[in-house]
Image 1 (spheres, rainbow, N blue to C red):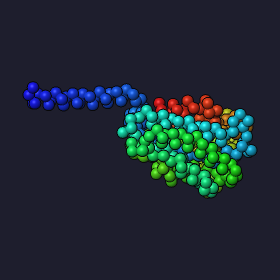
Image 2: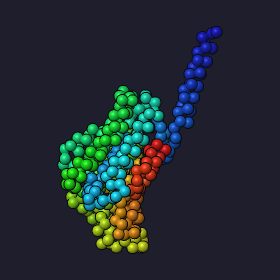
Image 3: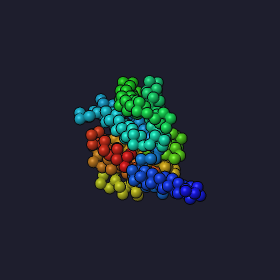
Image 4: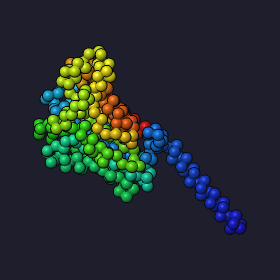
Length: 302
């Protein structure tokens, strides 16, 4: 057969194969809306960050829970996230892998062992180092080391508060957002924010929220929502244009004395994340890990 005839046929067949492969990949990858862009949840690059609140909320003596201590719930939530991360990598073609997972605090604990453990939980996985052995290391590390972190913090008994507002203001862009990645921040907190070095007030908007603040401003009545709107209560926005970030807030644990406390905390967080234009967010109370596992994995993998 004449080469002038064969060449176009071969070229056509090649492009058809490429097109078919792309169709198969798209069928195997679920689409989600991320800002104004549609992204593929299987082939995309994940950049997952944890932000831990190591304030006295994790103290089992001050805030005991006979069913399951709150720090143990945190540890289990972290493991569920890491399992979703590994599942994502296993379902991804090796040449497409370029994914990260890491863990942060603000402020950093004084205990250097805690900081060393957090550094050992930073993994960058790409096509050069991706392997079954590395995935096993990630799973084992996230199964064991977060518990060590919490136990060290509890044993130190030197709770320095939660400076999440300052983390959003100064660090979130550099630490948690990468180009060409699906950026997910997992925040483990009871919902209250307070640090002695970051106490700013602008009218009724603040950089902190405590149970005492809610009581003092009478946000513990059935009119709490109208009061928030009329008096402009809320967090001061700490960042802007966070469209390329998804946030999952886990562990909200309101003061049980106020039946409206949980609603107030969630309203504060929703308004804050909305004002900072966070691309997608969900806020969940501190439920048992067996019930939270599906919520976490659906958020990351679906």
